[in-house]
Length: 104
Image 1 (spheres, rainbow, N blue to C red):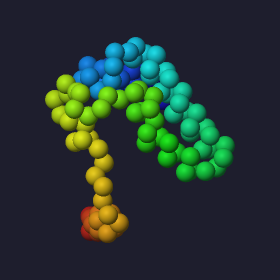
Image 2: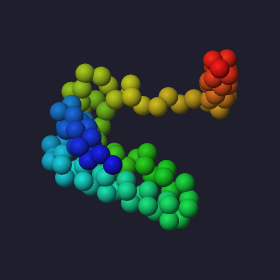
Image 3: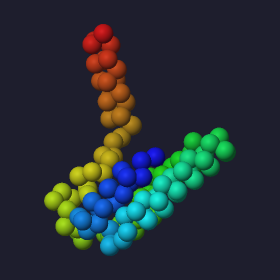
């Protein structure tokens, strides 16, 4: 995985005050090692449910600051995944399918 990508993202998070002052290079190594460990564990156990830990991994490794303590131009809530109901997700999938079939 791209260590420089992680390092750049962590540097941006520090600049926007999402996380405290830290060495982006060291944090990137720790983060990549944790991701690779989770991927290896899921592969060894042949259990994709093991990957669910990936959703909270950045917050746990990088120790995100609470919302409202940020100097970012956009709030983090704008980047969070929307919480859709099952029917909404089903409708989105149907719309995506109809677009694919009509485009052919």
